[in-house]
Length: 124
Image 1 (cartoon, one colour):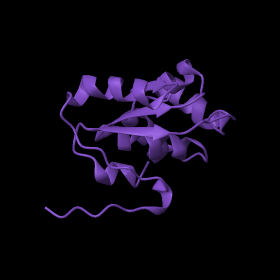
Image 2 (cartoon, helix red, strand yellow; image 1 turned 60 degrees about the horizontal axis):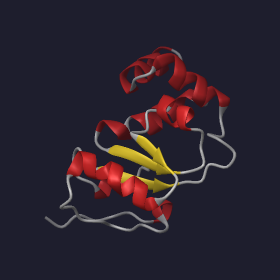
Image 3 (cartoon, helix red, strand yellow; image 1 turned 135 degrees about the vertical axis):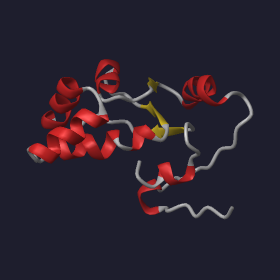
């Protein structure tokens, strides 16, 4: 997510292909999202009381202040919503239709098949 947000305009959309077959991977992360509900609230609580797991909730949600994130996933839809994802879809085509609600039908796509290893470089 950190690298993909570098390739998107403010208010743009990142479609993240993440099966998440084991869920979020952290009960603390899930509880933090459900309890605090905004990136600002998560950040404030971490500043006052740092907790491993809750820091991941902030790492994810801070990126969502720049762009919309839509998952193509098997993750439970309510959990995806609780984690502040803009949407969740079963297929890429479905995710692209959701994305068009935010960016319209005239958009560019950047594929980052190894997103955690790819750092996009913007040449203005």
